[in-house]
Length: 252
Image (cartoon, rainbow, N blue to C red):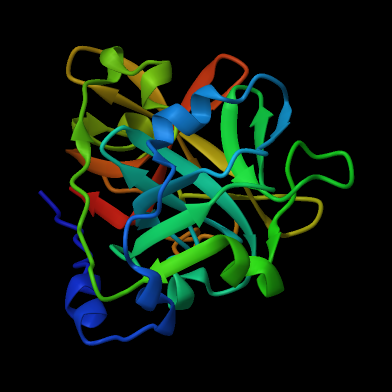
């Protein structure tokens, strides 16, 4: 059996880092859980007017290109993607960093049942990215108190709407006949990589989709054979669930 393991050493790196924004590291008044925040979304674009904040730890960024111009943070209640108009989010928002988001003036966008936190939309999207110049206004990054979030171990047939946006681990799954394909396909017309969905299944025959975006750094690597474990964020669109692998955590 082949083992593909990428070690995440962010906690060690973070311990040696200093960020001036950590001076406001106390828990702000009006802090609510991520699950509570998500429950406030009553329309496709819900702009927050109350003086509330959420606090969580970074579980996904663009370190391996798996998320493009966004991060995912989690707390004890779940996780949410935050849309940010910033390249190299891994530098500013490293894995395990504590993040406080001051939500007043931001918008929760509902796209096909998946919620994203970002700026008030000015066009056709349910939410826009928070501009780089506005990051300090809305987001506190505390790199002095890192905390590695453990994924929720869940079986494929137990995944439901409560897991959307959450960091999970799927054990003992296989890509079966799709092993040795690359993570992303190439568009024959343009020659460019495209977002691609592959199927996994467990030993009971339950199946699930794994979605990889073309910005992913290992898009041209071959999918492993056999059975193994995957770590990622549960995504959802109009009744269909998928997993987006994070931090290249593929153990086969």
